[in-house]
Image 1 (cartoon, rainbow, N blue to C red):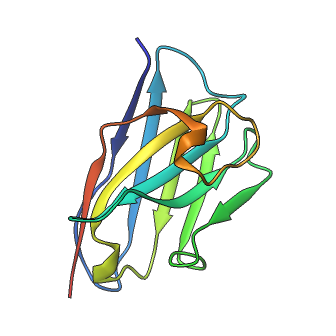
Image 2 (cartoon, helix red, strand yellow):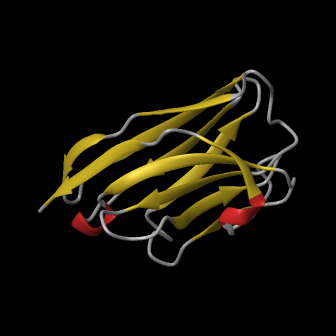
Length: 124
């Protein structure tokens, strides 16, 4: 059974940092792009960051560019999202996803596997 399990979410004050992790089990995703999406209450799930299969290419939503960094460790089958300078508007459930493409992808439809999400709450 393929699983993506996120961890590292929590409550943090504005300006603080969190590091999310997503570990895959059941298969490896070393040839697949990975992404982070987020969904705030009452809003649609939106793209946050993506990384290509080998980490050579990344892309970010404008709202997180310069503050978030996506990375991966294929030896550990894990992808990370370092979030700095957090703002209250970053509050959301953050989801890890694996694409069926190798290159970085920003569309939800291009992702096949999804984690259950981890809550990030930023207080003002």
